[in-house]
View (spheres, rainbow, N blue to C red):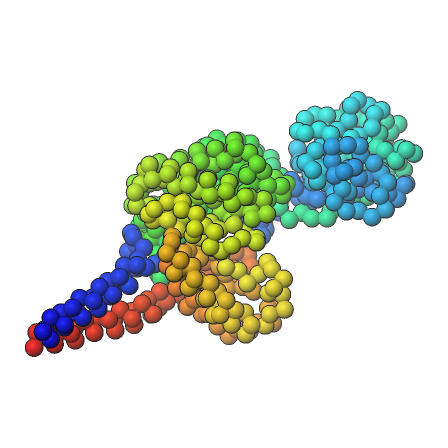
Length: 533
């Protein structure tokens, strides 16, 4: 009877051991059970803050696509305003500027621009002598104006015919200034204030330089920013995966739509070759969708507006891109998974629209692979962390990507170093445990960084912060990926952090699992010995 009991106890413990080791195992990794990855950000999808020097050679570089400006008449001392935010007249009668007085630039050349209102309409005119209105739904020659600058703040606005705009005594803008204005206080002179020029993505870079020059800039960047030596470095420091952001235009290589520059597909092919050479797995991440899913530069938004969720054409185009990527890379031995969309906006992308897209994307990937992981990214902003785990997107090898930054939120502004570290251990770890135990998809910390809002953090503080994140994020059932491999801001730069001792990757990933599995293994062996003897 005792022998039977021992046998059943042994079987129970062995089952527990196997369940523990398998439940958090990611298929296809070489010698590891979870993803320990790094993002190749700023390479195939441009983010100007990662490498600002890319934009240094652009003339009028502070007037790229999406730059927000306000205009004030120097004679009337009033601001130009699009009534009702667009769709009506343009007046010059506001003392204090707000959203109706703020316009987004669309850049046609280094001196030609179009003005887009808050509601999305463009400045237009119906012949010389008539008033300018904000009623055009899409821009053409009638909505294109030359801007002449003086000391960067004073401007003249000219039609293609050569006629200048001026303010009238009726507080309108008319296309009938006589002759060529000087830079004194005259009715054709405006003061231009740049409110924001935060967008520095692929669209701004390519359109800012123009196609010929941009082709040179992009080719040099893609060839030098990430190389095979970087994969060697990652392999040597315990990294088994890379998450590679790509833009929707990659599906049209080598001749993507204007202004995008071909060559990103060749670079992605190179990354897969290098990854295979070093036993590193690749996650393809669709970072930028047609029309922009969040209005940010990393979604290649032209002007900060989010058009992706409001257009079925955009969603269909995105699914076509997923089909292209899945069909091309599904059989490649270096592929680990495909992320269907990066950081959709909770404010602009309804959950039902997003989950419908994710379900369709999941099925597309499954056409080409039964094992590739399909990764769905959580909405950014105010979104329920559990919403995608309960969405029933697909039955197998599904992963939910959540991004953890102790930044971009006023909650973190006044936190000390100790507060930030406690937040990782208490809040992040608790949430991660809840997500892991939700009996749904695997959980992936697809972006995190060893940076915070602390201005006086010491080297030891940063080391402790990095250590806390590594310990906690390693509990994610799929794994984690650092943002990003290289960056002009040193604490965002993975290579800099590792070389300078701020992050120690090797040794993480197995501590908790090893101790627990060793305990169970020893227990099983002990019971087996009892049975034998």
